Each structure stands twice: as C-alpha cells, then as structure tokens.
Length: 133
Image 1 (cartoon, rainbow, N blue to C red):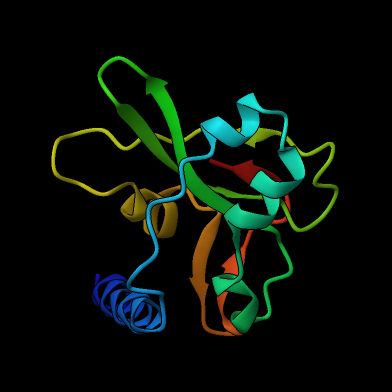
Image 2 (tube, helix red, strand yellow; image 1 turned 90 degrees about the vertical axis):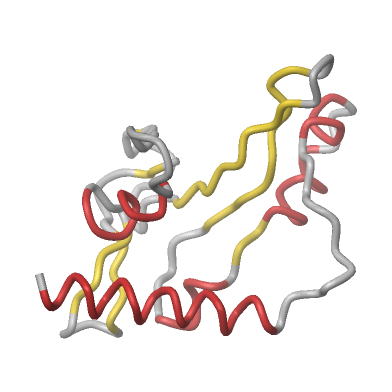
C-alpha cells in the first residue's frame, strides 16, 4: 500500500508539473467536429499526447473530448494509449471507472493499466499486449 500511495502522489505531482507548462489560453479539444468533417489527420495531430515519451515509453497516446449528445452539449473525455508492440492487431480494452467521484486515472495507473509504475524501467511502464481507452 505504501508503494501505491507513493506512486499516486508522484504521478499527481508529475501531472501538476506538466499542467504548469500547458497553454492557459487553450480550449478543450473537441474532436467530433474534426471527425465529422473527415479531418482525421488534423484530429490525430491535435490529440497527440507526448507526456509519456519523457519516460521512454514509445506507445502513441491521444486524448480529447468526443461529443455524445449535441443537444445537451454532453462530451466524453478519453485517453487512448496504444500497445507498444503490434498496435494494429492488439486488442482494445475500454476501461470506465465505477463509483462516483473516483477518477478513471486511478484504474489506468494503479488497477488495470496499461500504465503502471515499475522501478526497474524508467519508472513508468506501458503494457505491450493491449491498447487501452
């Protein structure tokens, strides 16, 4: 439990540090209009996440918002992390956290992965067996 607590605190600190370098003027990235207009390359480029590269993780990652109900303005945030090996044929796991008030990052980092803490390899590790959203 101590390792999990330490890891969670360290991750939170890293994400806060990364947020310091983010553009304060940036609006949320709503990808549905780009996808609707068949601007797939632009959607991929804008949604690209480079945070994990600094830890030596070669998996591609993307994040943004997908509109689920235009009438109510409802959107779903996602973070997609590809498998490091055979990403075109690797299975896709869709993880949605259960219970109110608990971020899906908890499951992403401490329960099911694909990101995990590993002290022997650049500290963060991504499973090479499956992609995760």
